[in-house]
Length: 274
Length: 303
Image (cartoon, rainbow over all chains, first blue to last red; front, side, top):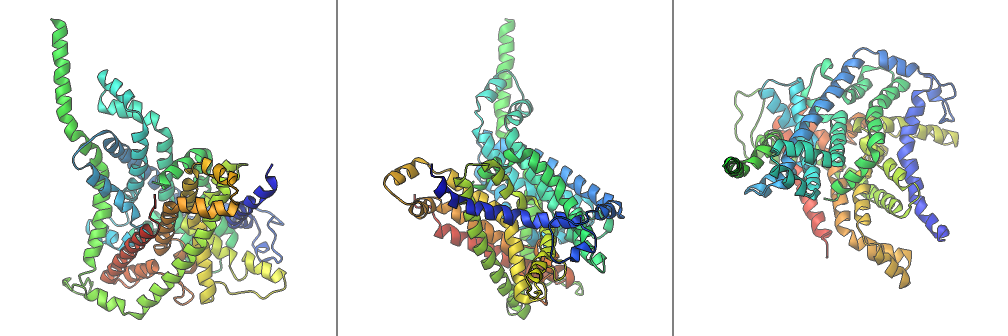
């Protein structure tokens, strides 16, 4: 009935769509162009002569599988450890009253506002002093630590909203603490756990300053680091190849997101306003 | 008889459980605490500590120098320059970022058609890495292969050296940074709007309020705390932005886009001036605290 007036609200949405999609679309489309078509004026969004050469170059390039492995391994291990630790911590904060509860909660939450890039100098010194520079443990521990504050905050909030009656009943039946977490709290909190898992994966998969500061050898590089190095490695930039590499680093996390999109966005909305 | 013993056993269990219960939460929290304190708190405090010592690889010891590093650095031309560039970068990103995220959030709040898809799309840049964002924007604004320049040429205009001129390069990093950070602040504002009571609008409409009045007299005042939080987020993310800037311009042309985080990285890893890098780190942290206190004051909820 008020369609005419509501049309105004569509303007920001149209801008949103163009603004969000265009840089991505232009990158994806150009990754399928030939080396020469990249320079063609006027530009066309549809590759005139599409080819998958760039992807073949990237996928067969030396070290690519190492970077994929490093990124995947680091993201999975650090996210798993971070989510597991946060589940326990959140359970502790949500279900127990204890003396230092508020102080410890703040101790874990406050570092969330510490920008990761600012930590690279002391972190470098710290890992250098224990001789673990350029190693997986240094990266895994650093990634895990940065993921825990957000995870604990979201999970604690969610756990507090789960009615304790079920756990009370279970503990009367003799369920152990572990059983209550494993068979009651975790199954009841799947949406929140998915949210924090996707967020941790995203954070670790996209991470750049730590891997830049804490590693030196080529075999330790992750995908974002290598993407950054592509600029130096090639004299003349083969743009379709650089873009194909970019697309390949974005695709997995975007795929994940599309699968879990609904849960992640609603989880984030509630997490964001806390 | 047998029943009482089981009862007693159960009671004993319960008592032991109650005693244990006192220490349980600490054990549950311990692993997280170790990570956060051991890595994050330790490095922040260690970094602040470093800023008071002269750490020089050429020196045999690292003497305590108090605030000397601060005094030296604060008057260094390159620091002042970098600080100024950061301010422009932050002001531009927060200004543009806030306008866009508010417009996006309001659109997402009002339009119900395909609401889920639009909301999902709005969050996409949040999942793209900073490095990938930088590469895509470097490509968009490249002199030869960039869409923007090719478009200008198509219109019969001159090419612009976006990444070769100081002000244009600043504009490009602001655009890339804004693209990267807007999704989260959109989400914060949308969360605030969705928490509003829709009856308020009904009443206002019945009373004859226009849509603009509703926006400025009802929505904005009511979500003021969320506006504050979204501004804190935008300011934080911009002040500390590193991932988008280094791969996009590497601080160039010249040092036109050498923002504070980049300068800090240079100090530490290119010039090996670790104490000065730590000084910049401390200054960045202080700026973050000051801006968040400022925003929290300004946008304090009046309710």
